[in-house]
Length: 184
Image (tube, rainbow, N blue to C red; front, side, top):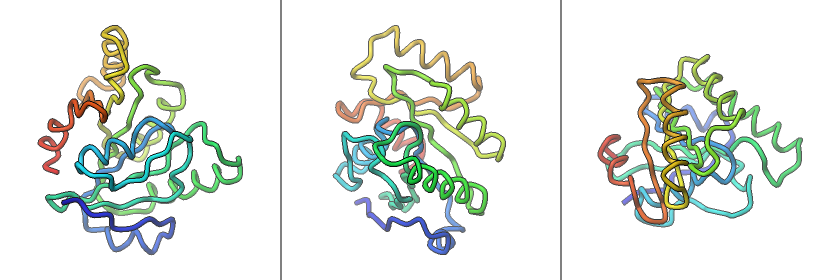
């Protein structure tokens, strides 16, 4: 059974996980990060909201196989002040630049929306820090075949070697593939 460990923005709290491989979920606000974690955990362990920008802290979870899974606040539009958005961005940047843990960032992309300029900017930022990324294309149950094809093609154009997962948290599509691939 998955466990919620903690929520924090404090760098001293990150240090206790420095020796753990980290699977980090990141994407635009409201892309489905928390819903995907709940689907993977097969329980409601992460808070979800229809209001963009509700996640404001770095949330740590432990999977059934003792893998560390991290839910980061989303980027892009959020129903919070510009000052609060800037504070969250600084926390995330500090986290990526200063946490010594081995990381794989799973960048979540809404299938109906596809890659936006801010997604490309964040992916390039991660590559500039030599952080490995995989792409999770979410909400595939709400997209047609053309949208699915287009967003997968966009991901492969970024990096032909990238791991791509097509998922639906609502219909549990692709969930077992992720659990198996990452040994969650």
